[in-house]
Amino acid sequence: MRCPLPFPERELSELMSVLYKWILGLAGTSAIAAVSYHYVDRPVALFFHEAVGRPEPLAKLTYMPDVLVPLAATVLFVAMEEI
Image (cartoon, rainbow, N blue to C red):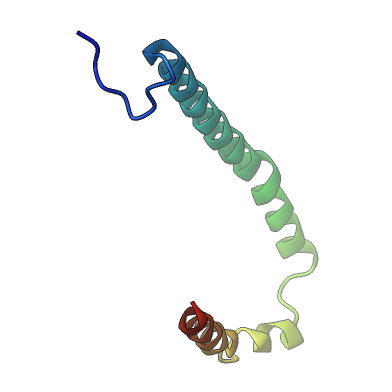
């Protein structure tokens, strides 16, 4: 007796092969992201922190309210009304 599949035209071995490839791709992407963070992003950020520091004009920008969040929410709600 065969197990009912959501895609009857595909064999179980083919579906497992696709799942295996997807999991392998996810694991590879996660590994590359972790390596990139530790060996590229972090050293570059530390270098610029030492070289540039925190310039006063840029430091003041961190205290500004973010006006794009309400704007994005408004655009989203208006777009959802059209659907």
